[in-house]
Length: 243
Image 1 (tube, rainbow, N blue to C red):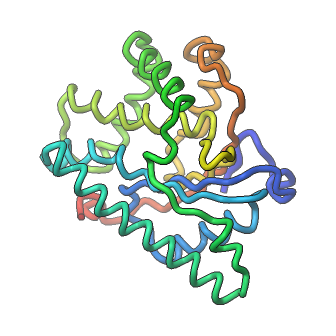
Image 2: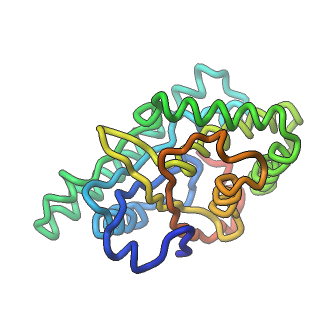
């Protein structure tokens, strides 16, 4: 793990409420890994922890890479989202049974993307979307992440679809920049499963530091801290294209 804007002592002192962002495109996710994330969040959070299933924003991947209609893509991510949520729910209940600690049930929650969309999120997303359209430097940096993802998929994508895929990153960024607010509680330590060369957490810090545009536009009332948990890239990249 690598820490961004936070240190081990602060994590161990349980200063933050934690959320874990789970991408439906994470083909390395297993019941064992789900258990690891639930246990880490439970053991290090302040009050509650959230497993955030990034279901709805994944639909564009199914449209671009599989040619699904928007409606069919939404149905697909809903189906996969519930499946992944079930894996984490089972991990919560298994840990509660094994340890006798019902906090795994009462303090660790599994939610979906629509659960974190609110006025604050919408405002922050609009700022980022506007910068993407108007700020060539910022757009170029976002597209670097898109290009990395396309390279992993070993396919070709039109420029138009690259911009559509960039929208998924714009959707995600507000949660990484300012945390999430759910059920009257702020969650602002993110456990972020990613490949070692992602660079997303540093990108978030650079945005907040004003590297690409005046950070006061973000109107941040709070900021988040990030912990990257590194995944090993699959040796067989074809599994990234599997259902």
